[in-house]
Image 1 (cartoon, rainbow, N blue to C red):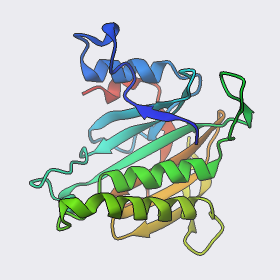
Image 2: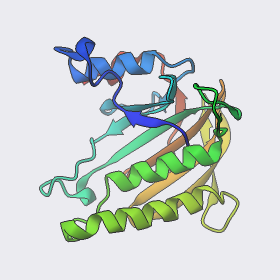
Image 3: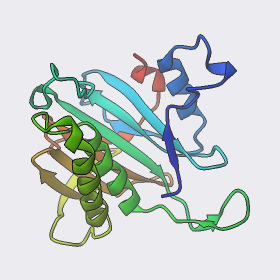
Length: 217
């Protein structure tokens, strides 16, 4: 996927003296599509992660977090963290690149699955693993996540029906020792992905985020 993940507004003169949460909200507000999060049944903490942009600065995807913010610190054991992250991906057809020299791939449910899978990996390193081996582990697992995302009808996935804006929708769903990942279509020109750990995917519901300030921390 031809996007670059970064915290919107994280550099440059305009970012100086601006709290990180405010800059994150500003980046989400630049999107031309709606954002999704867990619905009102979830009453715990909410927070923003990153937006991903194309080369021309167009916002392509981003994530909203719910529950504990994942941490790789030694004192923050992954087994004690409970969170669910919702990934919203703009539905885009194959299109010309900003400089006119090539094309950008279309986004799809597989894109959402890949972003969710790589997101889960980024916060679930096996803590007992030697630091020097972690990059090799991450490279290997990232390759596996890519292959799985490219084969959503394969045996690595099963169907899980969850509500989106109050209506049932079928998601591709898989579990691993590191957590769970799901991906599926939504409305309003976006695809949905999600990943989590310590918080069951069963019983979750998704809805459009009406007020991003609820995610400021």
